[in-house]
View 1 (cartoon, rainbow, N blue to C red):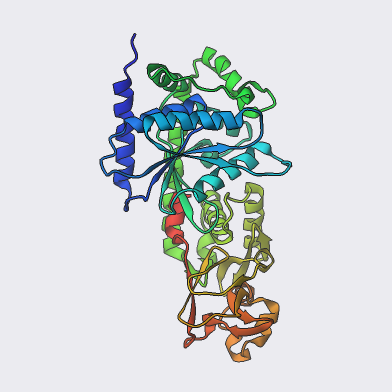
View 2 (tube, rainbow, N blue to C red):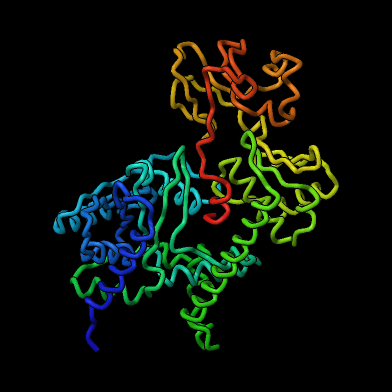
Length: 425
């Protein structure tokens, strides 16, 4: 049977158009992540076939991880292909020392950080993750005993944050098998580069990939597993919506804290408690991933006993019939120069028309707390107030806008609202 590229291209184009049609804004650009492998090279040729009716800027991004011989040649090869297609191409170089710990995780973080920094803040990053990647991720997480969220594997659209801005990632190829995508390249008479680590049994993903043949003998193929991930994604979405309803019923946000009514929270199913707590910790601390389940459960146990718990850059404590989750002071000890529009702790944006020369921003802290008027201190609970930003000159507290109604300085939360965050993460 001959390969019908137009059929594949039409399906791909529809995915891109539907995704862009759902957005409430027009992205500044589309960043396309392309290495020399078959998956991402097929993405390159499919995006080149896209009609791009709004004439969005397209930037092809290749990361040279500098981890093995030939990586620079692969980046040049992608650049040559882009040049023939008339597409803008950037090679991003990861400059690093010896990698300690999890190499794959370090490389992944570096890759996304480099790509985010190379495209406009409102751009979309498109990656070439395939149905095969989805299946492998599901099996890897199944081996670790993951629950609904883990087994949902990769969503077609997700958010990732490095620095002050969030980046939307879109994965249009999750319905496409690798074999189909390689046929795209054969159709265009384009060679791809095989990553030698794809045959290295030291990598879990490679071992899992080899197991798929045995699953096939049991009648469990890629499409069967992919359908299961979709069912898990649907379950995850439903649970997140229920968690949102709970937050809107008995939760609130005040001074950057997430607050839950203690009695209402205590009556919720364990899974909903986990979702609310882990999302609050991630939202407040700006960490890329949710805290470990064991830590979340330990926090919930502490909440039940009304015992203060710290973890993942946050402190959870009982106050006035409520559970408060606030920023942990010891996780936010940096100090930055003050000026209008500067963002502190990736959460607070300074708004002022005043001259800020010589002023710095850091958490109020225990020392700054002593400078406050004793009659004003009790307006905000102690554990919360000491982690809020204040303006200093040398060691002297200059202004703390949170309890000064006539202050000429203001700190605004500049994060996605927590209710929307619950649905998106």
